[in-house]
Image (tube, rainbow, N blue to C red; front, side):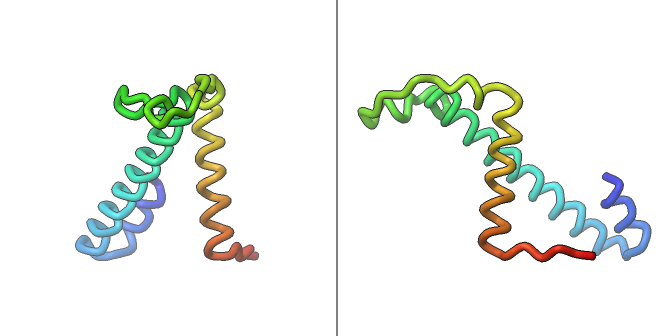
Length: 92
């Protein structure tokens, strides 16, 4: 929110609206990806459909993914994959 407010204070309304919508959609996309991964690997189901069981793969529920640390682990993996793909540049 602070970044959005700082951007809005220094830019035109149209640019600020686009920036706000882009940030909102980006944040929503990350929340959905993290929730999807935690549901799939935590309970082995998506929308109450047992994914692994229907594929014939035995799966035991993973309590770590259902716990709050699972969200941080999924987020860390997303950041790791993104930085590997685009290359990490340290700013000084």
